Image 1 (cartoon, helix red, strand yellow):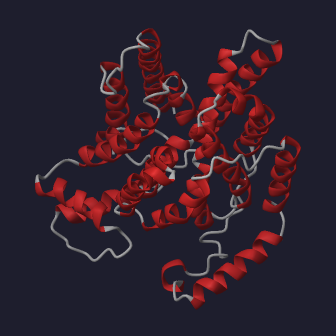
Image 2 (tube, helix red, strand yellow; image 1 turned 135 degrees about the vertical axis):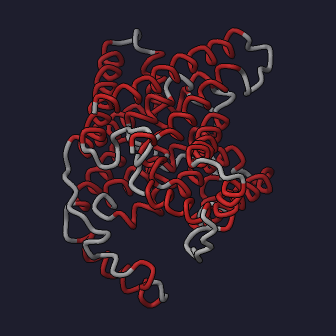
Image 3 (tube, helix red, strand yellow; image 1 turned 90 degrees about the horizontal axis):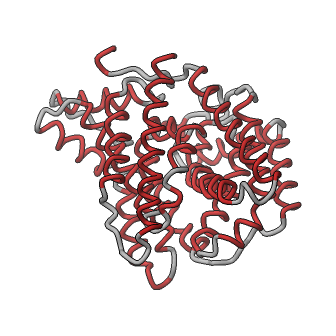
Length: 376
């Protein structure tokens, strides 16, 4: 565990420092359009990609992906209908040159971090906060686990900038790119019509908190179990039972302990909702509203799907926006920390809660301990 905190700590601190440098460079050179590929950004991307590439068994599905690549490397052309052709094509390119799997995992990590940072290349004031939220919220472990779909989620974070009628072609191209990695990217098609609107769908704080608390109650009730049975029936009717089986069974349904990660996340969500009107007034770009609309739907889905791992997958396109909005939130609190004691106290509490969530993730040892591939 000590090694895990050391490696994650080094990655976090180095990315924050480089993020501060990149942010300051943009602020002090506001009249000069600086290239995204500056030395600080390159450093951030390399650090994330290299450390993620050197890992072993970090992410629940890591060994499955490793086995898939080793089959490809050993010319075992096994039929994998569940894996998209674009992903398999990339594996084949690495296999053709007999590349070590470090390069494979590092490359996919590179794609993920590139889309995240490139999405905010004009808002580099977020760069010091992105890595903190990325790691301490547990999103990092999701990226290392659901590699293919996580790539799609990062593509969506970038694609939101093109969620408008006049840029529909760019959005469509990004959707096609995402489909090469995971079929669930089909959701991005109907999602376009929702996020292309600049309307603030969730502007009442009291209603958001009420819906959040209702979702928390629903996640602990038998109502969700009943809904799972209906979804399971639909899957059988659509002949997907061979792939997914009985989704309300113990394979997908779990009694996850609702501990600090659960309630800590709830505290963060509630704080964001309370500050949402202030943030919407400060971050006037239309993309913020789009991110927030997806974020709040993700808040509800986070709790509703908490006990069912299968249903968390389609919800990931919404729950991943927690990472984006939390970064905006942390920046806002930092910027106005001297404006009131409440802002400063909230900033400290949110940072401590995030650190607590991170510690809980690592301590769980659920494919979260960091080990290098040569330690296997």
